[in-house]
Image (cartoon, rainbow, N blue to C red; front, top):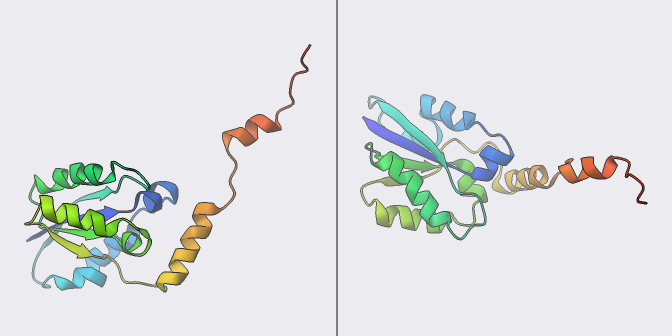
Length: 149
């Protein structure tokens, strides 16, 4: 049995509300990077963690804390999500520190199949992350101001 963890992008899950549905679908169907496991081998998803968000100086240490939570319960492989592979400028550093701290954990580059080109995906995500939105400052500034005496 392969005990699998998934490492997601904080921006994708927290800012863009990704529920990792494509990753989980391809895990169940053994598509994308999950096709590496033999069809007769049982796969057990033991957890989904996200990075610390970017940028942050403590990101490597935070990643290791999260991976430890999976490694301590028998993690065999951790898959970096499609969004991590296409969006994350820190993925190489994350992989290095994971492999150094947990040499018995296999790091897999990717989860689900690519459905669009990397360039298209990056542009679409950038547009989502940079789309105008209303913030608390907007609400405050829209209110009439009391006159000062």
